[in-house]
Every structure is written in structure tokens, then in C-alpha cells.
Length: 159
Image (cartoon, rainbow, N blue to C red; front, side, top):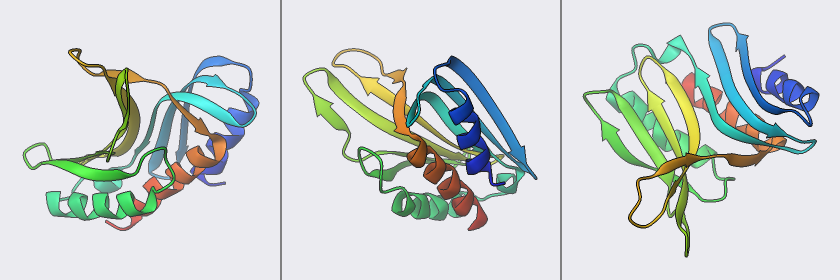
């Protein structure tokens, strides 16, 4: 069973429960997901991450190429994502919603981080005027969560 199918089965079993951490491994890869709330069709998550040793020796150029691939694959979130910053010293690439969701209360955006060593992770943030950004829960359907995991894995396969 794929990592995505395993996590979706666990989410389905956790319907109605709150603050459930999930860790699922298959081969060298591990999915971490912290679901704040689960219902039959969606989950509110704090973070979704794929950890894999396959990124242990990735170069900055490989991560930049992978970030371009990931931004093309993940075209189904509330906002489109795009690479915004490369940290050559830390060997990571940051992607964000581009453009972010804006309203009178500020901006909200997804942030994905590809790191050598290595993981691909998704979080959601909010930035209100005059305040530091804060991490907020992301409400995602089970289908979107499964697609994200599959797209994270396919991106890592391409490195």
C-alpha cells in the first residue's frame, strides 16, 4: 500500500478525533502529518512532510530543479505555488503561494520547503499587517492530501 493510501486510511479511521499525529513509513520514506481535526472528507492539518534519505546528497541545483517540478505538479491548492528563495548555504529551496490570498485581515499562503538531508514539507501561514507571520492550520480534502504525498514522492523520484 502506498504512503498516500496508508495515510488516507488512517485519516478515515480518525474521523471525529482531534489532534492526531500520524507517522507512516514505507521503505526509506516516512510521512509525518499532524491532523488537528479529521472529518469524512477533509482534515485540518498543521504540517504535512515527507522525509527521505534520498535527499541526503541533493545539490542546490537539484533542489531548484525539483522545486520547479513540484510547482508544476501542485496546481490544485487555493493559490498557485512558485519557488521564491534558495538558500545555497543551508541547501534548501522555499516555495510559497504566488500570489498569496489577501483580504482585510492580511495575507495567507502555503509554504513548501525542500531540504537536503532531507524532506519536503507543507505548512500554511498568515501575516497580518504590523505582525510577525504565524503558522495556521490548513484545511485540505483527503484527496488533496493524497495528491500532495504522491507529488512529493514523484518530485523526490526525479532527483
